Length: 194
Image 1 (tube, rainbow, N blue to C red):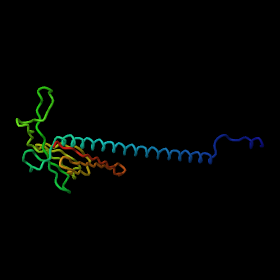
Image 2: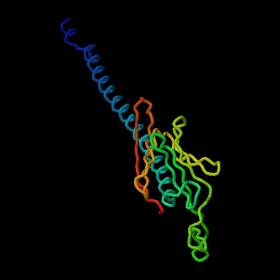
Image 3: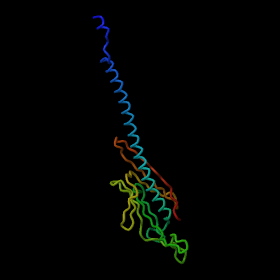
Image 4: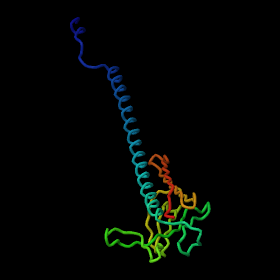
């Protein structure tokens, strides 16, 4: 009988199994939290990069085009055409005109069209940048054709800085799946053709 008591069964006790299960469960919870946090950071960074790219493309379009516009004291509709920004709070739109272009016969590149008196020939079709708060877009409208320059736009502001400079500010925002608001604002001072 004594030999039978000395013979020990091999294996884990219930307490050892429960402790090991608890430790494994704690490690699993920590790893799951790291994974969830990492995927949330990844999603936030992806949304932020998308907003930055949209804002940069939209603002670059505005800057490139406005650098060829002019602002004078002449009333809108007279030559040379004038750039117009409504006073705040309506300064989310802007109307301006661009010069006409011709292809240079020598360089085969576009150049500003000038008449015999050396005066720039202006296109009579106005270009309008407008912010639509309901659609959250910044659009360029010319000849009835609307081109979306940026989406997820939460604010746009155009302002006169001087007789030859305009400021443009573009703010984009978007909610993450966890309802965190990510906002990007880009601004630029644009020197006009004057």
